Length: 316
Image 1 (tube, rainbow, N blue to C red):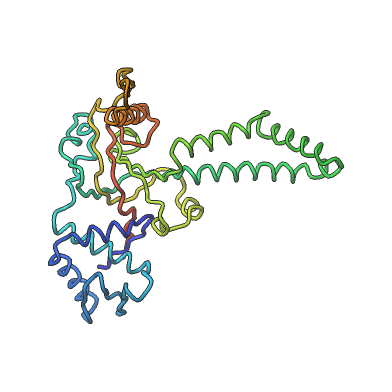
Image 2 (cartoon, one colour):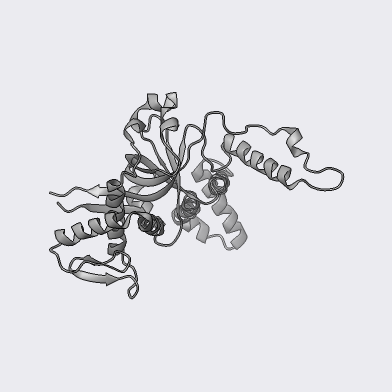
């Protein structure tokens, strides 16, 4: 039966990098299986050309198409499964395994992980853009509803002041829109404009037991433009499969939560100690991570590098 995948996100450069490191015989075997399943015409090296739907697409001479990207991913996933590179994810849905530390002791950094679970994606820059759009929409609605009164005011500045007063009244009080804008600016700056993906293997009732990654913002990685993406799927938690590579597994109590004044003594009477200076900077970053003010992993969450986020399409 044909396998159909709806990709939300695909880091094709990482797929190609990992695929190139897999044992060549395994990749050749997968390509040969695809060739045979498609009716058997011409087989070729995956990085030169690959048969899709009876046509040969050459990477060197043609722009890489979405079809080819998707096929590369499927070949990578199947080759990685044959090599046994995916970590055992069976304990990830057990909240007691997270509480006991079993998850953090059995998984290894660098392992590949494939997990279908409730997933939340938050694009902090898009969030702020939507806040701006909401503010503009509010002014437009109020201006339309009050157009007769506003049009009767000849003085432009007075008309703007009346509109601002009407908008404040509509929103429930003066300064309401400014407060909303501050929230949008804070979210974008707090998250550095990044797109965060977080999976909840034990369900949305256990938000601390999560797999956290940052989606690559490179062109083409997200399969839809931002507006279309969130219009289709929304900002709520929904079921997605994520294939990723484990980046960091923090240990309990492993982050600095306060600065030691001794670590701030960076110089003697003659020079600055670069090693001490670097240690102080690292400690400060760890302190911010421990307090939740930096994007690093915070126990018990596990940090990953996302490779693909997708849904399987049911076929009859």
